[in-house]
Length: 164
Length: 426
Image 1: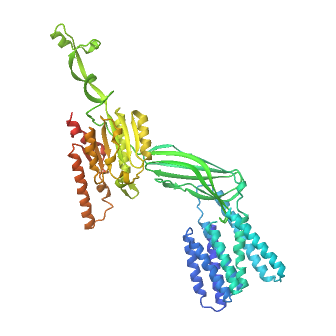
Image 2: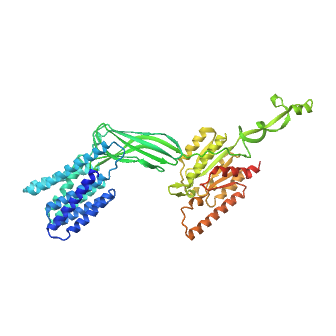
């Protein structure tokens, strides 16, 4: 079985587990139902990766995580569930890659680069979330305005880059 | 912006709005993985200034006769910076059936590396042109994409399959004054005895009829032989959409095109002059010619023929027959549509000798038709209508070959030429 499939199934089970445990901890009986909703959605997304199913599965997973957060479930589990859902979505896309007649080296390199970037993104994201939840500090109002302005300018730049 | 970026942005926006409404900070934290994922994608997006790709296409042959496999190989060299994700794709052209390899693949290319796109396709007939190879470069996540068209030109022609017919016994009413193989009913320099006439100065001595000369002292007689000339043949191929029938990826028109190619080959092999008219959209007209060059041009034209149609081509009545000289023998290859018979009185009025080869659409469609009574009745009615159409044509002393495409065509044409008006007029 290719590495991307193994990673995909691992992320899928972990995401479902995180959500189910998160819901189970707060005593909601829909824990199993949650896992039952997420698992088939992602399995279908892996089977038909070129359709709208992966995006739908991601939206469903993130929505469940958000509902869990609002219902008082463990933020760490819900955030981890949403992050793993993002990884699932990404791996489903990678699974869609056509492996043609080029040297396997070129295809292996593609997978390697993808995994490196994914690990970097998810690692940074989890680090940022954990750091953010541990370190809490007050930002003065002026600093906040400055940060908002910076964020706005950054978004404008990103938008221009995307448009080009 | 592609759908992946849009999905991420919508999720981020949705989470932020929900966080604002519910005043829940954890929901805002949930946007962090998506934003970082997006940010890393943007940072790793390929810079258009650093992209230098070169593509080269090679095809094992640029001409093929009949159904055959053609291998296409495209090599892409990266002369610029490393590309994290490169999607190469070749357009799938109409009539191509991929039997091996893929026309699309994704790779990552280091500087100086090469990638290959190899595939083998099969085609019954057609003209295939490639101008470019599509390349899509993006970051490893496929978020920010840059489309490129790399020049990689090539062309391949798949000519219709030729069935080698034995020489056909043509006896046209009129021939062209050029040495050939068809008896012209004129005295001259042939091989078959034609008659005897009085000697004219300049006649070769070896043709003198010494016996007759001995019986008539003081007079000389020369033997004449039947001159052998060539025929002027016009082929008309019906390429209207309404007469084409497609089933299981096959088409009745392909049979017509193959028959036209085979007939052109045998007539040109016999030394005749052949022209071609493809009645479709557009109307393609190939002027009369001889030999292998003309055969190649006919095959080339047939390779490009497609079945297109519009209202102006609804009937064969407006066929531009004036392009054929008045002494031509015209062979029409058409499955016939209702009211097509109107063309044939016009052809007879112009003085053409005509032979109609009509691939039978009902026989071809039989395996597709359902066995319920109403379909059988409809099929029977349509067959009767076709029979009526054909009988109207035969009443004009025009031989008709009702060709079931599963049968070999050559004996049918030979039979039609032997036992019809064309033969009897001689």
